[in-house]
Structures are given as C-alpha cells and as structure tokens.
Amino acid sequence: MSKTLLIIKPDATERNLVGHVINRLERARFKIAEIRLVRLTEQQARQFYAVHEGKPFLESLVAFMTSGPVIPMMLEKDNAVEDLRTLIGATDPAKAACGTIRYEVGRTIEKNSVHASDSDENAAKEVAFFFDA
Ligand code: ATP
Ligand code: MG
Image (cartoon, rainbow, N blue to C red):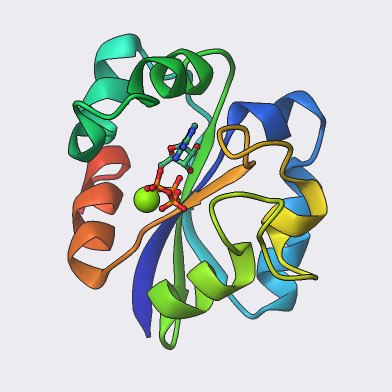
C-alpha cells in the first residue's frame, strides 16, 4: 500500500459535496487512514502552496483556500498517488476526463473541488503538513 494526500477544497465543502467525494474515493478502494476538517490560515495556505510562489494565480488561490473549511485526508491504496490523480482528473474541470471527480463537481480551474499529491515525495511532505507520524 502507498499513501497520498487528498484535500476537499472550500468550493466542495460549501456545496455539501463532502459525502459525495468520500463515496467516490471508497468506491475506488482508497482507505481513509487520517482525516480532519480545518480552516487554513493565510500563512498555512502560502506554505502549502509554496511551490507556486510567483505564479499569477497564487494570491487568488490563497484567498480561495482560506475562504472556508477544507478536509485533508491521508489515503492508502496500491499505486495511491497515480490512481488518485487519475480519479480526480485534470486541473481544469473543462478539460478533465468524463467521470473524474473534477469533471463531475469542479467549477473552474481554481475552484476544482479537490487537491491530490502529484508524487510520492510530495505526498509524504503534504501528509506531514496535516498529520503527525
Ligand atoms: P492540486 O495541486 O490542487 O491537486 P493540480 O496539481 O492539478 O492541483 P497545480 O498546477 O498544482 O494543479 O495548481 C494548484 C491549484 O492552483 C489548482 O488545483 C487550482 O486550484 C489552482 N490553479 C492552477 N492553475 C491555475 C490557473 N491557471 N488559474 C487559476 N487557478 C489555478
Ligand atoms: Mg498540484
């Protein structure tokens, strides 16, 4: 089993889509190993998205990610990082493959409902950002 981090973003918690997203994850055989509900501070959002420093969308992204509660969770599955990226779909919901979570519930390239780690190395860092051990 490998690990990855998923975050349900504020546009999805706002629209009562938490149960829907968790259902999609469980149907795809991800196990929820850790889960929290948190309201990110501006500093925490900047730290989490430090890799995007200097990009034109960062300020808006930080404002969005601090606009409401988010639900980070550590997920376990064989090939977790790649399988979760496939399940959520492309960053822009308009370009996401049919049947992916972003295709289904994402609104815009920013308000795309979920985050998922993009490598095993980043998964370990992102899990440690939200959870002990
Ligand atoms: P995530 O990291 O959230 O899983 P991703 O890996 O598909 O998404 P990144 O390139 O890492 O995409 O961008 C991080 C987040 O920044 C995106 O999920 C989205 O919310 C926002 N974002 C990315 N590109 C844009 C853009 N061009 N305009 C507005 N927001 C963007
Ligand atoms: Mg990313």
